[in-house]
Length: 395
Ligand code: NDP
Image (cartoon, rainbow, N blue to C red; front, side, top):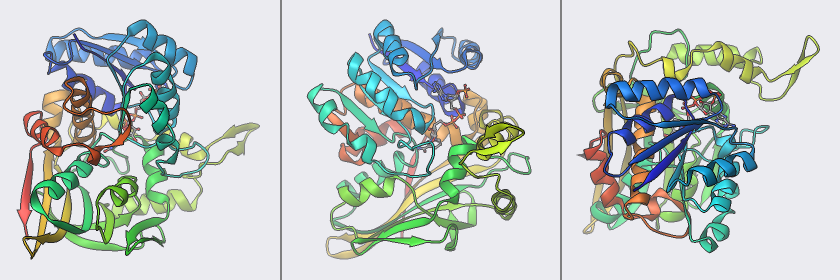
């Protein structure tokens, strides 16, 4: 009997719960815990209606390590899937160590007061997880996550030598709002407004935010402008893909989105430091989050598709080769299946599959791991089986 405990009842948490509920042969018991119990109740009702399964729910502040640990000791899950916010990562990892439970997440830890995307805080848990004979699987979403597994698959099956990787993330969908983010607004805006960074010839190169772009022909969507950003999977892939000469990350944005973002930045609404307001301290980006649509609410009426993949070039049998490994996901289909939009869906499905890899022993190890460190084949099979089929385009 396997029990999964999912932390975070947001847009992604909703998908993880539904997808675990669809695989009862692995996930016999499901517990959803989050800060606001009413959000867990809503998801539990939806899972009962769509999948006919009962899940347990619990209230927890995951930043309170003793409270989180008590919940794990009381529930005794076989794996924890953390889809709360990156700020909770270290606290939930501490609780997992004390309670002796494997850990899976989808986003690297970020300190609240500085938008910094580095694995160093989580990698520092390596020895403690190894000594406790537990696995921590980092970044089991789409990007990071599936993109790392695509790279491992390319390395195993398609190339003798990988020279360059471009990770390309396109949301060609329309949610009908003038401005909204597809996942947690605070985390999303912090990510996009930081300086760009990519790795080439053994060194990191920095760029002004959103200053480099290119047109790319995304399968299923068409030509879109993609902007160079720093993204966390670059840090681990540089270490784990031998011989790599260059790796970059690109994301598409529409003109309307960028104009709103520029105005919000210019007036100070994206600031992450506290400002005085009528005798109170407020953090502008947290206030902005309260005004923007909840990403979990965007699903109904969302049309169009996401198209995300890795363009990889290198050599096979002495000849130059270039491939694009990708998935296309339809917002409307996601809504029909699990009442979510495709950005939550493409994150929640791999989070469920990561937990499934741990529970079924297909991925095993003691310590802290990034996705590309394991055999990609069972994960790639599971993507086809559980809703994120992939294709390989040559050339
Ligand atoms: P949401 O903001 O919709 O949901 C986050 C949930 O976590 C909320 O329900 C929130 O509770 C809960 N939460 C926040 N703090 C705590 C706490 N201290 N204790 C317990 N629960 C808490 O975010 P998303 O669902 O959009 O995103 C979830 C995660 O997925 C994020 O970490 C994001 O970075 C990651 N992500 C990863 C992607 C990938 O491809 N790898 C892509 C997209 C997202 P409350 O309702 O009370 O606020």
